[in-house]
Amino acid sequence: MSDADPSLAVRGLAYAYPDGHQALFGVDLTVGRGERVALLGPNGAGKTTLVLHLNGILTAGAGTVHVAGLPVAKDNLREIRRRVGIVFQDPDDQLFMPTVREDVAFGPANLGLRGAELEARVQHALAQVGMAGFADRPPHHLSFGQRRRVAVATVLAMEPEILVLDEPSSNLDPASRRELADILRTLDVTVLMVTHDLPYALELCPRALVLAGGVVVADGGTRDLLLDRDLMAAHRLELPYGFDPSSVPA
Image (cartoon, rainbow, N blue to C red; front, side, top):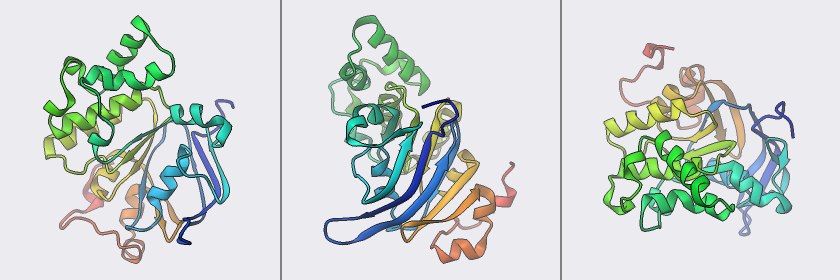
C-alpha cells in the first residue's frame, strides 16, 4: 500500500446470488483519494450488491476489489471494515446503544481504544457532524436528521479511508438535508454516495458513475451526465420537475 494507491479499485467484479440471479457482470471503477463520487442507477442495477463487496459482506464470484491497495479478502476483513465505513439508509440499523457516546465509541473500543484516547476519538467524530453537545442523549430521543448525523459519526470514529453513504438525503427535511450536505463537504475522506437524489448528487459530487444491468455504463462529470438526456432516459433516471442542472453554479 502507498499513497499512490486509489481509495478504491474494482476490476472485473461479477457476482451471482445463490438463487442464480446475476447482479454484477464485470464492474470496473477507480475512485481516487479524497474524491466525492455519486453512484447512480435504477432500482435493480446492482448498486447495493456492489457496495456490499466493498467491505467483504459479499465476496466476488469473479474479479477483485482493493481498498487503498489492500485486497478485500478473508485475511484482511478486520482492517477492510475499519477502512470502509458504510452509513446505511436507516440510522436505526446502526444505533443500538443507550447513549450517543456509547454508539460512537463502539467501533473504536472494539479496535482496542480505551480511556482518554477513546473519548477523544468520540468527541472528534461528534464534532465533525455538529453533534458534540449530544453525547449523553439517548439516540431514540433525537430527530431523524440528528440520528443520521450520529450514524455518520459512528463511522468517522473508525477513521475510514472511504465513507459509503446509502441514500443519505432520504427522509430528511430541507434544513436537515442542507446541514448534512454542509458536513459532508468538510470531511477529509473519500466519499462514495449511492443515491436517487440527483440534485444532491450534483451538489456534493463532482463525479458520478451510472450503474445499470450490473455494469458501469457511464462515468464522468455529474453535471454532464445529468444533462445527457439519452443516457438519463435509457436508465430510468429522472430529474425533479423543473430542475435544470445547467442552472446550478459550478
